[in-house]
Length: 79
Image 1 (cartoon, helix red, strand yellow):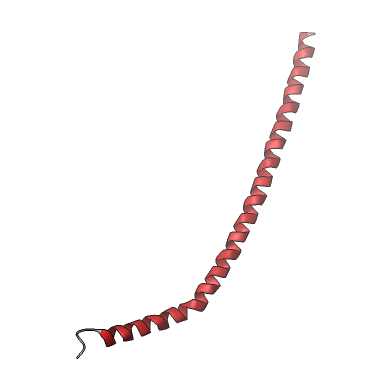
Image 2: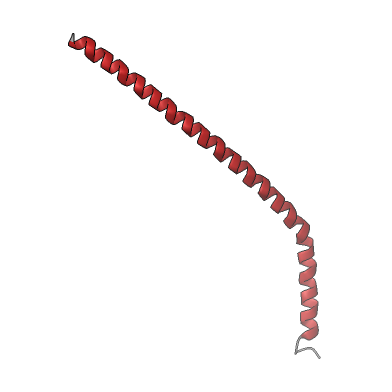
């Protein structure tokens, strides 16, 4: 009789353990899906930012040239 009770108790523990592991696994899967979505959004924002910087970059070079020209024009060493 003791063996029968211990067998059913062991079976019950296995069932609870598998249910618990399945629950943890489903939560991890949900977390990974959310993380993947966040990463995808960050990549999209990064690409947009990169495109914006590429549009502005030539203008930055031109502004730097103009600043150098103005710097030379207002320099006190200029004769």
